[in-house]
Image (cartoon, rainbow, N blue to C red; front, side):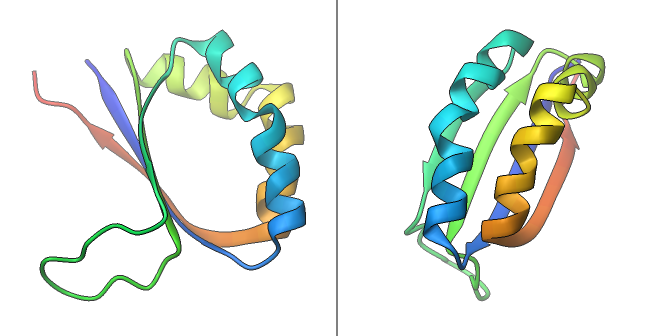
Length: 96
């Protein structure tokens, strides 16, 4: 079953986050993921939005997501994300 990953991030160090972005797609594309949306100006139509970026990706299933998220390549790359931003990463199960 398809899973979706929603990243709600607040970027506080563009240089560190830029190192994350520089090779993100190179690593991401190896793991069957699809980048669906990236937005630094989403429109909150209800409630408050306090993050500075939202990212939406999908994977064919949770195993594919875990293969990417726990891969040595991504774990190393994510250090730059952690150094330049904070926020939440949500794993959402798709409908069957």
